[in-house]
Length: 102
Image 1 (cartoon, rainbow, N blue to C red):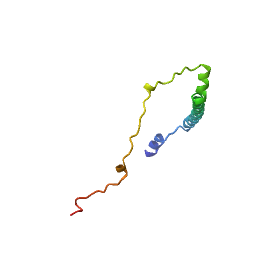
Image 2: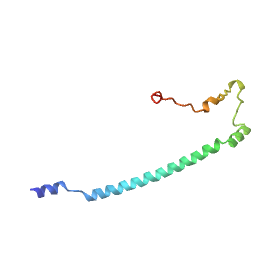
Image 3: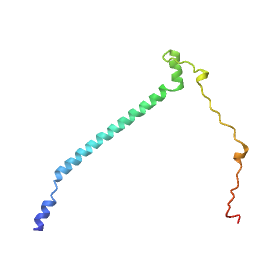
Image 4: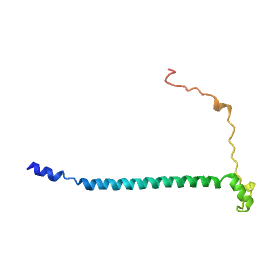
């Protein structure tokens, strides 16, 4: 009885699994090639963005009249200053341990 039960449980359709493996491999290759294509397109777009937003490109566009820019008025500029450090900040202060003084 154990023998007939084992044969029913261990049946594997090897042809189906081989075919499925082949199709999944083909799909993986297609997805990997699409990923390479998308990375290439991304690199090209990044290079174009860098070229179009460079200072020289913007100045050229400004001279051509493509861009209209106005200077920022002095009232709209905010300047932040760092306060000077005092000499006391650089000194190391001793730590007094009250329990060690006993």
